[in-house]
Image (cartoon, rainbow, N blue to C red; front, side, top):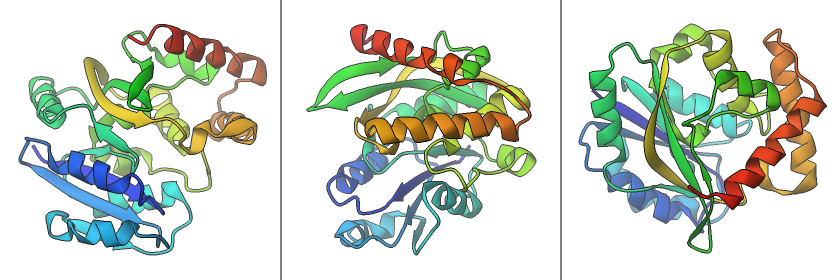
Length: 248
């Protein structure tokens, strides 16, 4: 079983080396490494080029945002399973992909696996997001499973579509809503901390981002002929408070 892991980046010189080292530390051997850069203007590509021979695909060109870049990576992928490691994230340990490969092998009917993610600040876990008790009905409240831990069969993108590149922040929410709720793909949660994610990403920056993501979540529902409202969406902030208070 072959995995394609996609990393997209733009001006990520402060974090990209740690992400790359984490990618190449995985012990599982059948991994295709794909990096899509949005024509960075800092030293990102200089760092990437130090490892270029280890990547299967490296593309550095202008794009229309993160989801356009992810789509380029998916189009270039040849693996059976596709996953994403963001340019400021790292795997929790060296065995993550090996564990996923074993799970997919044992569960042939499963289309996707979803694990857990730890949010890191100053090298400390300050929030832990487990999908153990997550349910598709929580989409209505703006709560999706942790996207960085979503690994799925590549043919799902052919069947059900790629990321909608018109979204700026909530394109991952829309895709998971479409795959998990609209098309009801078979997924399984595994009790594994897969990723360490640094706080301060595109969807966690200030009030303006909060307003944008709420508007885009409403749009995601409309595009899929579903409904929610801002009152329901407010519930997810209470959920996040519990994640901060109870890290595990």
